[in-house]
Length: 189
Image 1 (cartoon, helix red, strand yellow):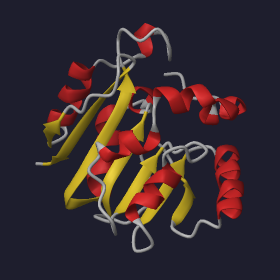
Image 2 (cartoon, rainbow, N blue to C red; image 1 turned 90 degrees about the vertical axis):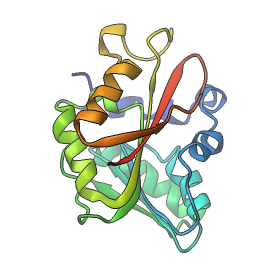
Image 3 (tube, rainbow, N blue to C red; image 1 turned 180 degrees about the vertical axis):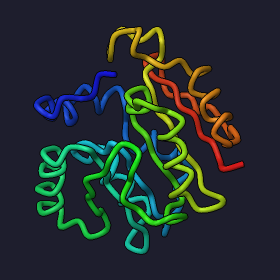
């Protein structure tokens, strides 16, 4: 399965991305509350991590996880400029988030679920780090999107739902995004 190339990290902050995926509007759909702990898995350069940190406030925290140290270096430079205190960057493995069990309220996945080599193991790791009432938010490319990965790499919402249900999650909602993306919000069952 194709993984995002860190050499293209400049695309993660592209203006078009902001138009297609307004970060605060997307994060609202994940039902983030002040004081929560969030794991932004596959955080990239922090496109969603920093707005999420604003939403959880000074009593909350955002673990910014990525498998690429090179990408996290860019995030860390942004943290210095922003004087960001509640974003914690972590180099993680795909199925090893380097977080304690039951430590986060929300696992946020933006355009990375389709990249997971073994989705069952990936979801098992998500369940491990989620608190008992925790939730997972999946944002993915829609099948009909003319942007994003090739169609054979995309994961339909129906396929994603099947993986979630098989892993023991209960679908809460399918928040509307736009014609290029779909979202799923699920809780631990």
